[in-house]
Image (cartoon, rainbow, N blue to C red; front, side, top):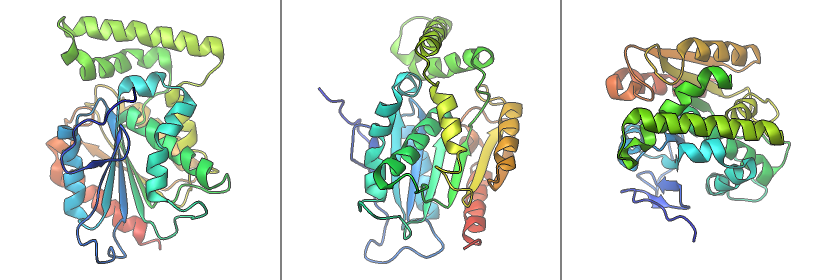
Length: 290
């Protein structure tokens, strides 16, 4: 039996993990300086009641834009085969760019990837676009917001952080102490890593990082904004800055915004004004290039 969509008030499911909300004033064209579509690829195990706070923030900024939200499990990000990840994101591709030969020139897309899970499925949507519209096409977007992602891709040094992230999302399902849940995920991640090495497959995080920095897949013309903090317990700030330096060296226009004292994917909660002002400013800067 196929998985059923979870209840998500205000949104219509278009698959078991992809949801859409149309903007206001549907009879009028979206203002030329605003996004037509906002794609929020949520963090691992993010619940609708929490992700809604981000969709509401975007709706307040850009009330005419439609908002597409992807909800995913951390386990799906770490263990789902590459082809399955891509196929799961085809409803996103076909909703934003529905015509078989369309190139999306009329769409002004803002992508918001949250944590590594969000980045993995944003990358899957980007690859899915090429599958549908041709290898010579790069995913049309104006701004990519990377919220608490990416960090280091070195498995051995990061497995402790990743097991904690998975435990945070699943601890409520188990009666034992948090440390046991994290320990079980730690063992699972090592076993999954060993299996990937044996079969010669690419880890999902490594794959996503490669995809999102491949100029033949994702254009260097779109701006990028990285949101992070030194207190993030999952993504090391130095790792993120090193990654961003490599991205910038490849020709991608990047901006960094550091927040004080906020935890992983918690910057908006602690600093809402700084958070939304920075995103709005980055969008204006991206549109000023037109």
